Image (cartoon, rainbow, N blue to C red):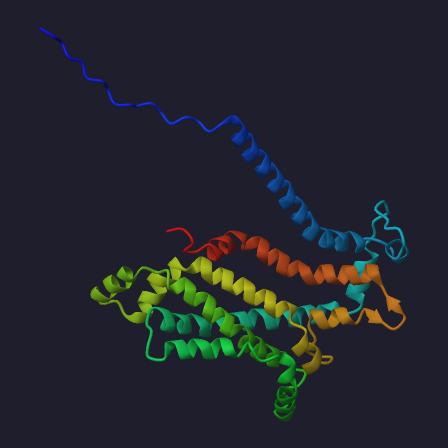
Length: 293
């Protein structure tokens, strides 16, 4: 009796890619890493040099050949504080914190309405929001100045709070709308079936899901408000000046005080850098929210 044997199917694993191709790929990754490091250092170096210059004497800071080895001193920081940086720092904190809170208070319901509860003409509303950012600020400073002067709010920090709120609100609504759109509709339907009111659904279900996006939006509003200069320099004087206005005071007709200006700029940048460092995890989660399903 003949015994027949069946040939097993070909179960060989696919051949590994050729070694030269693998070497080319690793070499490309190395070069991409080197380029990324070079770009990162190039962006970070001006900040590093500003902080380094803030610990120099003016004679060491204003030299043709940059001095890397020097005797550190805190004299420039003492000069900044003696120049009265305190009120400007407090004004910046008030304008930034309160305007950001108002933006979130107004922007979260608005973004929720135009995303998860859209109505007729929603696209027109969104276009109206973003169209307010298309007008140059310099084109409206004169009427704003006249109105603020007429109501007696010139050189008042609360004027900046209102203006910064209006400045950041359209961007915040657009950003948070994209985060709200990532919330599964089934969660809202289930909450509605269970009889949960709208505000409870928003507070206990939706907001915890999009909290990274809210943190990212808040941090961007903080950066924009803290760095704003045009409104502050035109609508404030002695009582409501902010940190950008304070920095301009170091630019004189006699020249620039590089070391003292670097110390003031370091103090001005420090709160925003600390805020970004504290919220970096939430910021990364917010900016990548919805990127991976």
